[in-house]
Image (cartoon, rainbow, N blue to C red; front, side, top):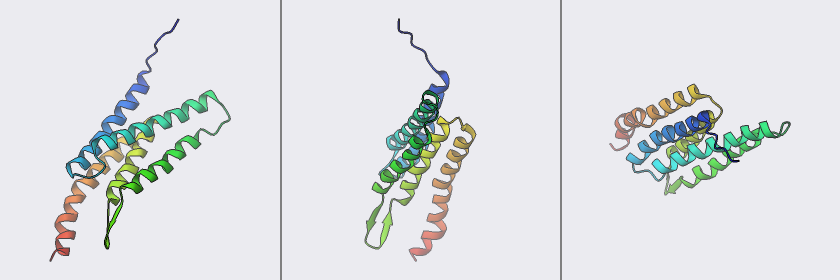
Length: 147
């Protein structure tokens, strides 16, 4: 009849997408940014799933270009990122949030393709960029702007 087969690797990839996307999203949430915890989890998870579909399609339909699905993720993420960018007078806000969404999508794709090391390293570098470099900017760069 019907047998439920649980693919452990699939579950690990998707759980890691939730975890890595959640870590980045939590940092954005703490800064009260428009795209926070849920958005980053969903972007990472969705990107991972689309990439897994791409892998599945390549196996099921040999000769078809599975890369088209993965490439479409990049385009779609561009639209989401653009929605977070706001121009207020002469300043532009939301570029870092858009970049974090874009990076989170790349992390999800890397996880789906089994590039765990790359996904973990980029997650770590993203955390550093959002926290340590954010503090550095506030203290040394933007502090001079206010004088």
